[in-house]
Image (cartoon, rainbow, N blue to C red; front, side, top):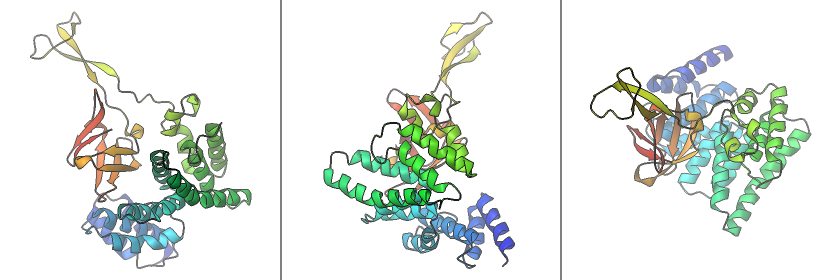
Length: 322
């Protein structure tokens, strides 16, 4: 198969919503040259299907890791992230080290890896031995990223992206001026033509640096994601109608609007109180994966409601809250 044919088939596999068709295309692609970046992408994607048990693929961690190992060796951040999640679920001690490697790769899996490392750091704050272990895993990766940036070995800006996430998620602890340093890294990555940098600069609330928590969530600074109360009109006298008469024979009620999935947290609780980690965010939905069994679910904007205790979502996969 020629390089052009591989690229065309990989694009079709990545774009189709038919997971059975995707698996068929990926099965053919992973037999091609393992040094080809699209083939590595196919290996990572097919490994994800086995990891999640989708597209007719049985959930098989061993098969998933075998497929993910080659792209992971080539620094594919999504492959590294998925291997880290497999090792985390199976309680292997090198999971933290692989999360750090996924962060350092600076690609699409880097953000989720940074969020997981931040979660581990916050959870382990009261445990000095764990914090020392975490620092020991993170330290070499941070030094390697910084060294390669100094030596000009960052042609696509991916390592600048990694450092920006390092500051945003405070992976080295609270550092004075960390948001300014993050913005500097993103602007340098943008100069190198990195598309993710433009996205982060737009999504992250750098215009509101007095609110680090908002910035750390990588929101769009131009959008207010707070659920608003907005008027809904029903005919006067209709059962359940409450509110105030607008003078036109209609009653004005109040109802919560929907808000963008881009503001959803990186960790939510699901059925059986299992923890789910965010993998990806679209315009109107977010994908989460369960750390216990790899179960994957999609939370849509229209699923989300606001209550006294916070936010919740009812989906075909069950009840989620955060």
